[in-house]
Image (cartoon, rainbow, N blue to C red; front, side, top):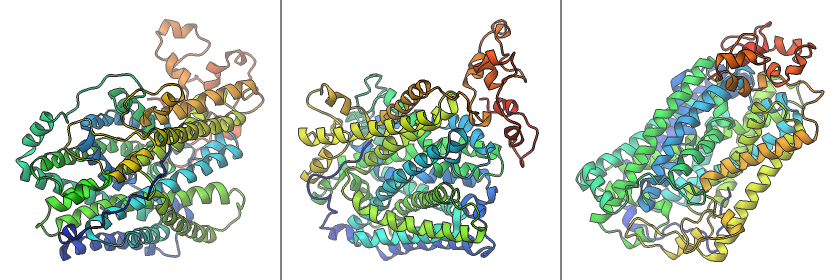
Length: 638
């Protein structure tokens, strides 16, 4: 997916902030500053604890000794940023609760990484997810994947860094770019100095602040409008409570199928192959702890989504009884929530500051995770392969310098994000646009043993070209047609000219007077299907090129890098059918190539060198020689 570029003036923060500024008291400033100070203190504590004895493993993977709960909360916080805290309630307020069905994708979106991606990554004992691509294909594929990930995360960080600063400017009158600098510098310092352990423990603290801030808004808001029962009643009367929309049309922005199944691919790109999440899995003490942390994210994600939806419903009910001011009605969609919170919590010192701290907690956790993962892939994938003899001390110092460098780069990207449209859709668009092809690249390697390096590179390029083609085409089409979002759920909110201009430049139009045809029809594909579309393009093109170029003929496939899909499917057959096959599904002597290449069994040509066997890693504990590749593959079963 793509991110829109503004065709008019950039989206300005509200200039008349006198009314709102008065609601941000000294206590609120204290609460907000306290968040920054405590986050910095946690990071610096882990930075100076054992200073001078830090190894590159401690800095990048927390010495692989993290427990299940902190890893789970860090996984949640990584992408539960201010983007979601601001965007989800605004989405619900304007378009109803249809977006809540995105939670249906969380189950498969987390179950598959727990039983497919985590076992493979963990047992390979890697540091960067893109090391897998070199083990499966070659170094060129690894570099291509790394560069694509860096491009994805640097752009995304601009959105995450800009969003809460825009909110703070709107409600307090703080200078916008001073807020950006403060957030970026604080985050860069504790991430660069403290490494992954500092990032994870600050994520834990910031996750608690996020939940507290949202909970305070729900409690105070529902009490002021007459309780959650009244909120539900008002929302139902105005058509805000959406039913299950079973329209299978992928060009409809939000339907049950789009959210539940298109969202699965988005979740897989986030929690399956994204380095920021993979790095947390790999920091766990054991593989079992990594899997449990992935399981624990599921209920946490459901709670976070439900809280965002409730805030949107409470906000809608509140403005049915208390009309918006002129300033609020002219605000951008991503400012709705902040104006509502400042209006709602006026006269309750500390609570407005808590919610602003909640927003900044979301951004700090996401940005720190990105900085750390970017430093990791740059160090492990782009520097150490070329300079393998660099000492631990120099590698540790270089990693810190790289993290600082990415911090400065993302500060620059924040300016570009100020030209974007609505934040939630822009953020998801970026992950669909670049995350989808990366997901397809990993799936091509894990599930298709015949895929070769040329197929992987051409497939990735095809996926990226397709993503940019549709994304840019959608922007041009929206700019030419002048389509604008209009709330279909009976909201009394009136769109301002600024919002209309930005909406025209946003990737996905929501509604249109007439259905587009031809290429314009393709450009109107729902943004939640982009990950699925782009990853499928990588797999189809990659397989075609691999087969045309001879597949893996004459090359060795490391069995540890393959997830045995065919043996899993064969195991579902009746026992009588299994006995007729050249390999016995579910038996201890089943190997991947015995099923894929049965003609080689009689000739003793099954591949897999002794070196690969000796490198096999069991589920827990150190590397042990003599474990067969067949055993490793069997242990990755669902």
